[in-house]
Length: 312
View (cartoon, rainbow, N blue to C red):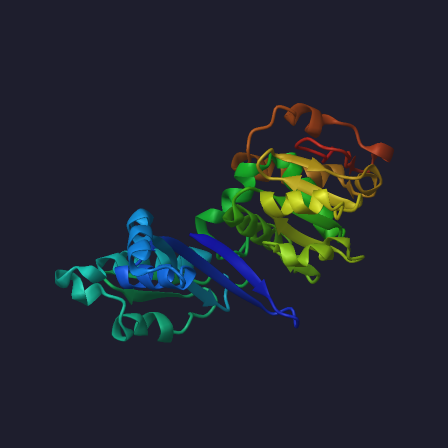
């Protein structure tokens, strides 16, 4: 299941989950395709081509959208709908087929208020939809996937990234899996609470929007391996963009940008100890947490790369 976020021109967001699989095409559809690509061939040649083609498959998908970032519930619904779709060919499983009646609870059940919960019947299971209290920390509806960011980066890198966003820098997240990009971006936004990210926000950047990397405004953007290769080949990633490789657990930051980020030493250590149990282990912990503060008033962020930039 892949999660994603759609941002409209008015900055409103829709949150989604999608599951894709491949289904065999009916013989009639395959034959129609052969006839279309071989209009000048006789019936014998078309039959031979059809025999060579064998069984063909086409992608099929289920996609859910919500105005609230209830990713855990959306992912669970996608998996259950997929199971119901597969059981559609079993006459004994008609009550679990994808029909208007079976989908009605999913489409009509209203979301609960802050701090509430509702159960949505879907086939033979109930999907739990939980909205946390408005003042709960961290304020997120991502469920277990909220921790994906911390599994990718060590504690110093998380703190540095958090500080860079508070300073409204240009941040580019990189990962092979698009789901990781979405969840990491959502987790970073949640860590800004009680503030919220008001600038460009595209957790999964399509190739058609690559030019936005050169925009003179702060942004939080996620990019997968294929689109990143296109951006680097075209020289579209400016030097002042902070590049965060979630797969390699590294941050590449312009030294001038890094020097501008200063964190108070006492608060840095307190935050470090609170986040450390959830983060990926780092071989540079002692270096990152024991460095002295310039001027005696806090830690200075170190630039370039490698899992940590937050001094202490």
